[in-house]
Image 1 (cartoon, one colour):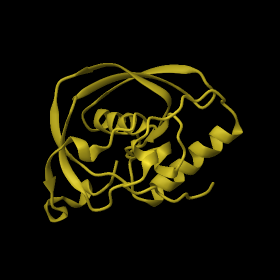
Image 2 (cartoon, helix red, strand yellow):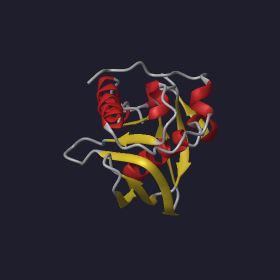
Image 3 (cartoon, helix red, strand yellow):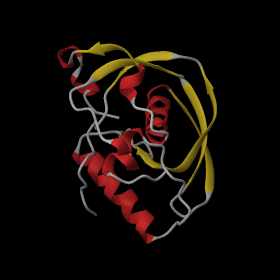
Image 4 (tube, helix red, strand yellow):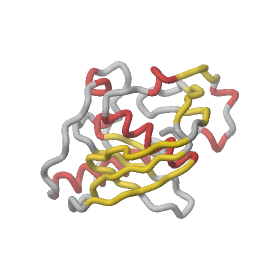
Amino acid sequence: MTIRKIVLHPNEILSTPTKKVTEFDEKLATLLDDMYETMLDSDGIGIAAPQVGVSLRVAIVDLGEGEDIIEMINPEVIDTEGEAIEVEGCLSFPELYGEVERPYFVQIKAQERDGTWYELEAEDYEARAILHEIDHLDGVLFDSKILRVVDPSELEADEEELI
């Protein structure tokens, strides 16, 4: 496993919709493993392939605390409900935090690293992280959704992990 360099804004790959994954092979498994290591090394809870310079519909969310690692390949949002405004950050925007409105609940379908499909429902912070990463895959960046910029001094120590 390799820790890859995080692509920082502004970079065209971050605002370009990604390509669908069609090959579920060792190269994809290596990408997922490298993304996970890169995310952990950067104190993140989520990462999308464009953030490591790869334009594929691949993202990971890991909230830690005994939660399962969510690997999303070719994810699609099936349903959302509710609204919540919370503070977000992003590995590709160091030191930028902002209040962002997102659905409180999300239902998605996505593929595992072996290509099998699964469905997942998530609420609250997990839903927020999933939707943040899917936005990356669609070329949508969180800075375009910020309602209010939040100074890093306003953050609690446990909120400093980045999506």
